[in-house]
Length: 211
Image (cartoon, rainbow, N blue to C red; front, side, top):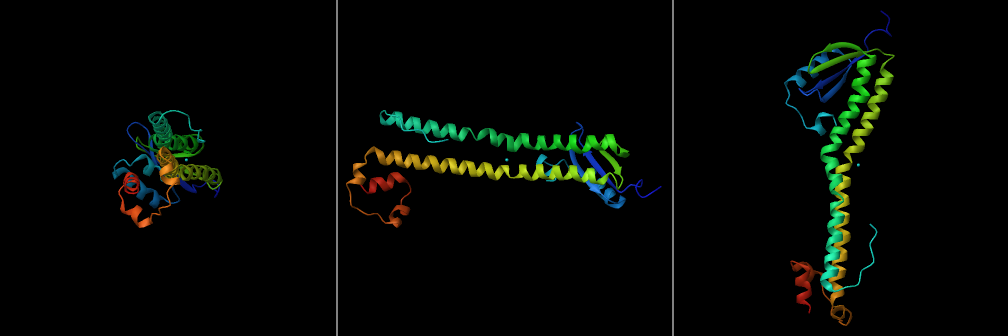
């Protein structure tokens, strides 16, 4: 058997009882593969994220009385925060399933069609690949890594979006509160030190203290 026909390495997959792909490993010797199999068989099912080894312009103020303006402001804030809900759901629920689906389509299906079956048990499936087959395997692994790394940024991006939304609407709320009686602030020469502001528990206390 030539070097090109010999097994250059192994790719193994672990599935749960519902045949959902839970984990995979790329090994280049039998000892490494056997060690992974023993750990995979004895471990409890990991979470989706871990088991797969490691993404408005302000409207012009409408005229109306104060309660109406306040209601509109709070309504826009609620809608803005609710719009992030779908992204949170995607990040926590759909994303791991999408990663698993990509893994099954790009790696497991390819292994079934083009690689040599070494073991085909219910939970563990092992395939060997030659040196000539490795570049294609590696290319697919790189695509998988790009997907995982890209999706891994979604939680932090979602948090930043929430913070930015809150910051934007908090500024609008402050502007709204100050616009109720602007003469209190435009006609006053009184200066407030920062330590006085930080000593208060809320914006209302600051306003009441300086009336």
